[in-house]
Image (cartoon, rainbow, N blue to C red; front, side, top):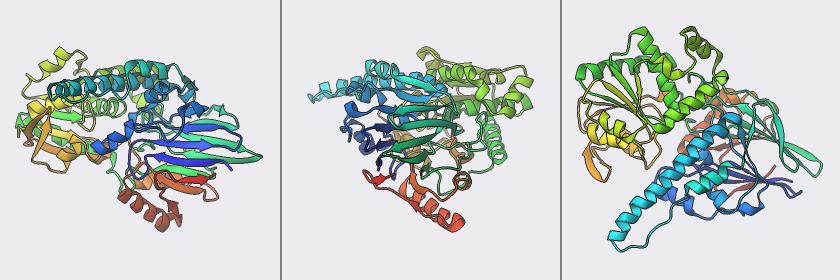
Length: 467
C-alpha cells in the first residue's frame, strides 16, 4: 500500500511537509514549508531533508505562504528539478514570496557575518539565495481550480478553493497503487468565512484519509461585525489620543483584507485618520496580483467594489499611500500622529514594521493592533503576552503603546468552521490533525469526539501510515 510520512507542521503550526510513496515507485512531496518562530524551530530549516530530493517525482503546494512553500529554493539548490504544482494564482504569488524570502536570507547572513567577523567567528552561508529561488520558480506548473492533473505515476491532484488567501487550495489527491485507489484530502489552510474578498472553503464529501489544519482548533473567532466595530473604536481612540496606529500584517492576504475594511470605513465616514501608509513593497506587488485575479473574489465583495467604480482593492481607499522606496518608508517616522501604518512582517520578526516599532512602541499615545496569529518565539508573541520591554533592532524598547489583538481578522477557520467543513465527508475517513500547537489540537480532538463522535489522530513527527 502507499505510505504517507508526516515530516512537518506536526504538533506545531509551521513547516508544512508530507511525503507520499507508492509501491509502484512514485514519490510525491506535499508542501515544502519553512519553520518559523523560535530560534530552535528555525534551526530545522538548515537540517538535511529527511528524503532524497533527487528521488522526488513532483511537489504539490497548497498556497504561497512561506510556512507552506518557503523551502522550495533549498530543495532546488539540492538538485530537485521536477515540477512544482500549484494553482495559477499561487504560482504568481510564489514569485513574490520566494524572491522576498531569498533576499531576507541573504541580507540576514550578510548582517550576521559582519558581527561574526568582528568576533573572529566562522561566517555563515544564507539558507538559500535569490539564484536558488529563481531556479525553483522555473519548475512551477499552474493548475486551475477543479482541473484534475496526473502529477506522478498513479497520482492525480485536484485543487479546490480553500478561501484562505488568493489561490489557496484544498489538495485532493487520488492515489492509484497496485490496483487500489485511495483518496487523500489535505485541507491546506482553511479560510475564515468572515474574511473579505475570499470565497468560503469548498466542502468535499469523498476521502479515505483527511489531513486537517488546527491552528485555531481551540476556539472560534468573534463575528465579523463585532471585530470591525472594535477596530473602528480603536481608530477613534487613537485619533483622540493623538498617536499613530501600527498594524503588523502579512503582505499576502491580511493586508488586502485590512485595506478592504478601511476602505469601507472611509466610504462610511468612520475613518478619522488622515493617511494610511502601506509600507511593504511585497504587499504593494501582491495588490497587483490580487487585481489580476479579481474574478476569484467573493461575488458579493466583488460587486461592492464594482458598484463603487473600482476593481482594485486599493482604489477603494483613496487616502492610501504606498511607500515602496526605503526613503519613503523612513519619512513615515516623521509623522507623529494621525496615521495608520500597515507594514510587514505579520509577526514582527522582520520587515519594515520593526523600524516603526522602534519609533512608536514606547509612546503611550500610540496603538498597536495585531490582526492575526502570533507564533511562539516571535516578537509579536512577546508583545501580545505582555512583555514590558522587547528587543527591537538590537535595542531594548519599552512597550508603552496600547496593544490590541483582533482574532476576528484571522484568515484561518475557527473551531466551529473546521467542524462544519469536515463533517461533510461521508463514511468517516481517517482524520489526522496537523498545523497546530499540541494543546490546541487536543481541544479540537475533544470537540470532534464530543460533537461529531469522530476520533481524530494527532501524528508524531516522522510517523508513517499506510494509505
